[in-house]
Image (cartoon, rainbow, N blue to C red; front, side, top):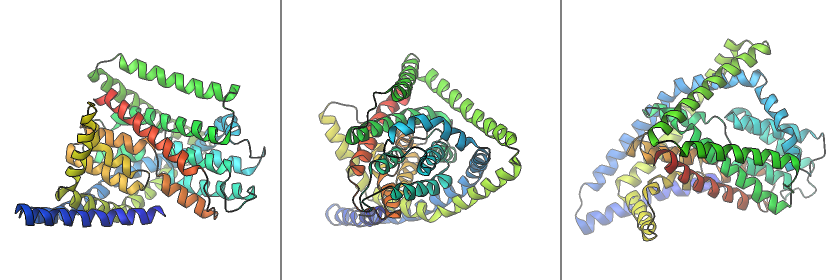
Length: 414
């Protein structure tokens, strides 16, 4: 089923389930406040969605302007060259020198920098080129599946959108989730690469991959070990300082790269900033739709019933269940980016941007990508109907990202 249709059914279910539960409360419990609360929620949620979207304009304009400078300054091309030795091992079925390799490199590099507008057309181009190598046009090839799993696992160096939402929602330190997201998305991507390689019998036990994956794992293990030596307050301070320093370094680095390429950095920034304004306006109807649906669902008591049921099940195991309140974001993310974004905003609105649930929902949002949407768009663009193990590998990568996000969330903010 197409992910847009899935989101359609989920959105309808929000209203129907909420109405049934509210009606039951009115008839059997005499609760006359539930329907007025649901109506109030529709107005307050739509107002909140509009205010958030408008408030995002400035920060989105800033970051998309900076990203445009990096794009024109050749940062994406530089990352493509750096990734070349690794990706040739992950895509052994692509002939050496084939143009698909360059498009794949560019797409992954753009995704890592959060350049969604640049990444999507590059990805579609890569799929077209991979389809040229495909002897069974309606069936996904191994390189196609590996490429899309790398996309769905959501490896991102700079989670611009999430940092922007946290700033808009009043977080004291919007960048405090930068390091946790980076760690969680690493585990998601690592799991995706390993699982897909096992399916495709790709040998990861070669010098290039061992050095790359081993080095990355050692670095992440070192980061986790180092942060575990700190008390929670110091950990938060150090994480925020590192994140802020890295982000400022990226900004300066992009500007310097643009200067080296003799790019008019001011004009490039303005060009990207215009996209930021358009993006902020474009998301208004989507954010209103999902937040109103969630608001009605929550006001009816349905969300509390769902979360309480999950907490009860977790409590039977004796484990802490504080993370369950953030799970709606994790469950929605494979289906819809806008839906998960709405769940994340709802969690920060309900529990607070700096609460454990608010932060964990942001980590969930950043740890993976919209698996079903990506598979539908990319495979649909080239007419592939039989996706083989793509969905399985993508969802296993998502699961790894969710589990990692919970553990890392407790490590940093629990």
